[in-house]
Every structure is written in C-alpha cells, then in structure tokens.
Image (tube, rainbow, N blue to C red; front, side, top):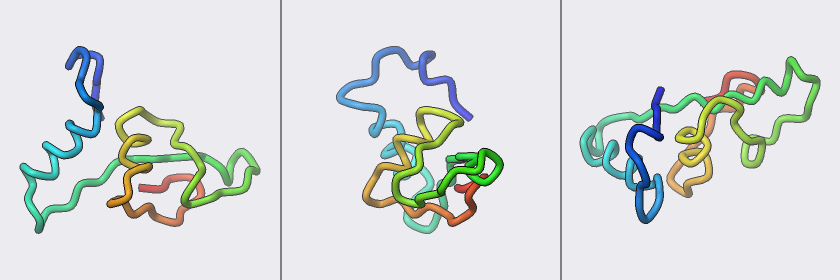
Amino acid sequence: HSFLAKLGKVTPSYDIVIDTLIEVIGQDGTLIFPVFTYSYFDKLAYDVQNSPSKVGLLGEIARKREDSVRSLDPCFSM
C-alpha cells in the first residue's frame, strides 16, 4: 500500500514511482499491485482491460501501463 500524498507533487507523473520500484527490484523481480474491482459482488461486468480499480491510485496507474498484466479475477485482480 502507499500514501502518495506523503511524496508531495511528483513530476512528471506518478509513473516515476512505478519505474523506480521496477528499477530497484530488477528484471527478475515481480511487482504486484491490488487492482480490486469487486465486480462480481456488485453484479457488474468485469473487463480485464478497462474495469477501474477501487483500491488506490498507484494500482490504477499501474493497471493502465502498457507493461502491465492483470489477473482475470473479477473481484480481487492483481
């Protein structure tokens, strides 16, 4: 979990936070963010590419990146 407000204004975007984490863990590491939608519980259609996360800004930013892969779980996707 993160508290991005503690970082202050991040420029040019919060992608730099994700890029830095990827740099630190290296090519053999795995970076996982919760991008939960709770779609199943809310009786909503789940779209792995477009359903927004309901649990945080950093995960939502990561979800939208071209280098991200999202799991298929309609409630607790990562």
